[in-house]
Structure formats: C-alpha cells, structure tokens
Length: 251
Image 1 (tube, helix red, strand yellow):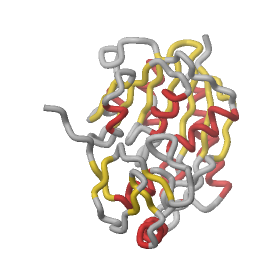
Image 2 (cartoon, one colour):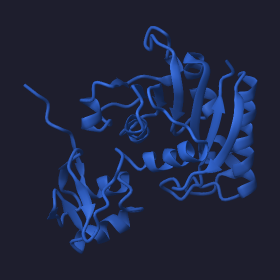
Image 3 (cartoon, helix red, strand yellow):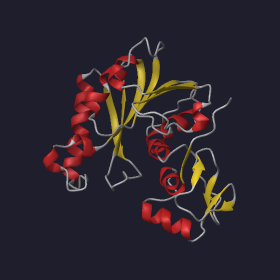
Image 4 (spheres, one colour):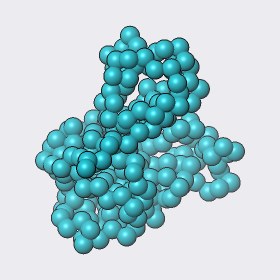
C-alpha cells in the first residue's frame, strides 16, 4: 500500500512556501479568499492540505518554485557567486522540507543527501525523488563515509539552535577537494546570549558581522578558502537578518 502524501495546516504551508511572511498575513490572505489550492479558494486556516498541492495566491500565477522559502535564500547565493550545481552530488544539512535540496535539483544536481535530525518534514515529492537520499533522524555531527559513501561536490546548510562550528565538522570531512559550500549563517544561533534581544533577534549589525567573521575564520582554520558572503534576501521567521557564506575546499 502506498503512503499518502503528508498534510499540513494551510496557514503553515503559506509561510513555508514564502507566500506569506507571518501567521497574521497568512490568516488575512486565507480569510479574504486570496488563497487557491489546486485553483479552488480555501477559507479555513487550519485546513489540512497535502504538501504536494499546488498553492498560489488569487490573481497571481506565482506559486512557490521550491519546497520551501529556503530555496529563495539559497538561489541568491548561487546566482551571486555564479555556482552551477549541474551534475554535482550535494549534501544538504538541516534539509527540513527541502528548499535547498529542491533548488539544487532544479539547477541540475545529480543527487542530494538530505540530512535532518527531525523526521517527516521533507516534501513528499522529494521523498519520492530517486535523486534524493533522505537521511532523516540523522545528526549531522555523526555523518561518516559509511552513511555517505561518495565524495560530495557541494555542501549547503540551513541549521537552527546550533552553531555551524559544531554542526559542520563531519560534513566538511565528506566534501571532496575542490568542492564548494554555501551555508546560512544565523547570528541568533552564533552570537553570545547577551547579544540576542528578547524574542531571539540580533538587531546589532556589528554583532551580525562579527558572527559571520567568526564562522569565516573557523572555516579557514578547517583548511577552507572563504570566497565571500551576502545578506540573505529573506529574513528569518522572527525578522533576523541571516547571511549566505560561500567557501571552497582547496584541491
């Protein structure tokens, strides 16, 4: 018997898809009939909707291009740093619903190892995609060649509640010489606790830049070459400014 595609609340899906920026905005869009699911309006924010459903806003042909708004973050880095993942084997740390994974596949990646400590989050169509190795319930700090038995061409990461310096040592060891990395630096999880305002937001630009510099220094200490960084075009759920940092592993 085949599994049914998992479902989520409609208001939650709007935020994940990047069609709404907050629960309040999602509620407003739904209650005013602006949200179409498979081209039919839906009016209940708590309605359970398949993750694979086509969801768009009324009077707009725009639907989400990737499995989550994470794809909208990563695409800015790929384009700015002129990274073409065509034919690459990728490793996505903190894959969640699969925004980064989806983008890499749509840009031509051959295979993606999608790693997340949680489970049941990866978009159903990605679970079913033969190019995706779904390593759910897997701690990135415990990755090894036994779990990922081939060299990784490109490493991407979007993790929360942990510093990249703690999450990435094992993944970095799997990145082949000449491999590339684009990781999302989240100051709210890198800054000293005293620098994080109530609500978990880092408002001080200087602190944000210090966090990016600290991770860049750490990557350099691991033998990587930092190419550059850029602000994410989309802020975190609470308004945190995050940064995409690009690096390579010398051949």
